[in-house]
Amino acid sequence: MDSLSGISVFVQVAETRSFTEAGRLLGVSSSAVGKSIARTEERLGVRLFHRSTRSITLTAEGALFLERCRRILGEVEAAEAELSDAAGSPRGRLRISTPQLSGLIMPALDGFMTEYPDIALDVDLSDRMVDIIEEGFDAVIRTGEQHDSRLVSRRLGSCGQVLVASPGYLEQHGAPAHPSELVRHACLLHKFPASGKLERWPFQLAASEAEPELPQTFVSNTIEVLGFLALQNKGLAFLPTFLVRDTLASGALQIVLDDFLDKTVTFWILWPASRYASPKLRVFIDYVSQNLQI
Image (tube, rainbow, N blue to C red; front, top):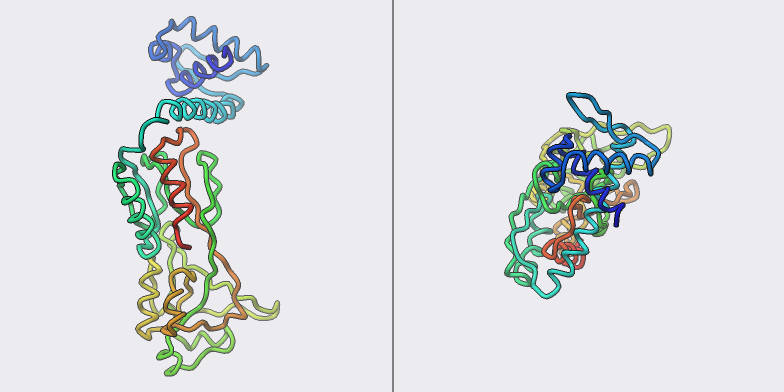
């Protein structure tokens, strides 16, 4: 427990950059804070802070240690919260961010609201890349690879992506037999909101074949719009299977060039590693993991 106390003091000093302010918040003297830091540095065999008469800054070793210590304190806080909240039902406001895929997201949120009426949802439904910690979100749902060490993640599931067009469009313009033929077709393209770059259609081509230059017939940062236009005979769109599952089954859309494409998209739910997963957040993570129909 002495080590845990030292960790608490270290984190407080790292966040306030002051022995005096850390002592005030912890209810001890600044000299007691300084001695605690000195004992921790001696035990670890490294300097955690650069000290001067005007400032205190973390060393490289201190910055690395801080990340681990925040996680340790978060786990302790989580354990205490689990015990204190075990008898109560989850409640309170939950701030989340999700992709702008209402057809996928809203059924799960609707079910969650029915299951947990005491939890109020504050939802940012958009495709922008939010900063979870800086903007104060409890959790976000995102796609793609996740590399932010400040966050904890859980995989929600994966689905394939397919190139589709309506029978009406294909009857009028013909079905492309090879990706090179797309230069003569209307292409409905997705633009990533964060980078502004167009999403590639990842064709598997021979080494001697060049990737086709796709006509930018229509560009949108929201893929549901592309699915709508494809149904209106406006062109070809590269979309996740969950978005076109029903229209493919009914024949309203058809898959084209399937032999040339093989790509999946993975969904994740992420939340700050430095905060304990409160009861309201834990039930949300579990519910979404079980009920998001990817």
